Length: 283
Image (cartoon, rainbow, N blue to C red; front, side, top):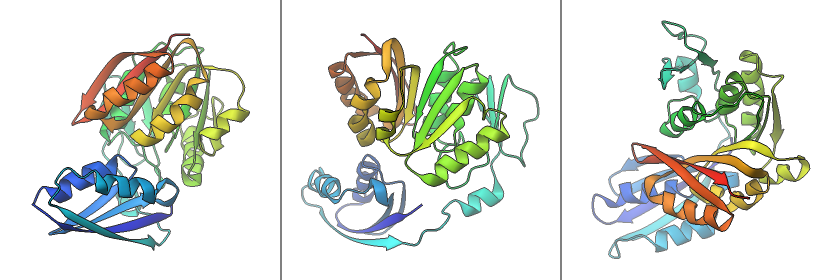
């Protein structure tokens, strides 16, 4: 993946850097390094908008805090290499599903077992939003259903849907590493016949016919708000949309957007300030 590194100089109180990092997370920043009055933030180049960054800095709620920044490109390298080399311990979700890598196997069988070999892609079950999405997905009757996975990452949600009985899953991601990783993990989990993966952003939906019984998107808030109108066109009446990748305080904003698109929020769940929401298409 290709990233920008943004170096912030912060002249303010001790809480300023943490608050700024939280606000930057809402516009797509993924990782931070915090030291004294400086903050380094990393964001994928295709997600970066200097206009949004300037708006975020201008909206900083501490008026006496002065924030300046510089931007530089960072080398295209595998940011997850150490994590990939070490792997992760099995993650149990809802007492029904276990996510594991090839080195760390679960102690006992579960109804749904997902093996993930993550290569520069988001989604192993370690993050709250992934667990929230899988937990909610397991509540749905998916047998024979047609599913869409927006921003598929490792393909973990697509695989969970496939192992829950979904008939066909269409997935897409703007990151070519994620597309390749989803295809790899689909084969690893014997789900490659059910999962079709596309490379691109939400515009790939223009070339996909028909509607879906359930759509899931675990992306950051601003991309969700931007993509929801296009996603909505792929929902038939009574179909559901599962969203995550945002904080509790963002639920109202996403609900307003959904309401304007003739969707009704039917439930929400949260974990450590992260949230997910389920909507149903009204027409």
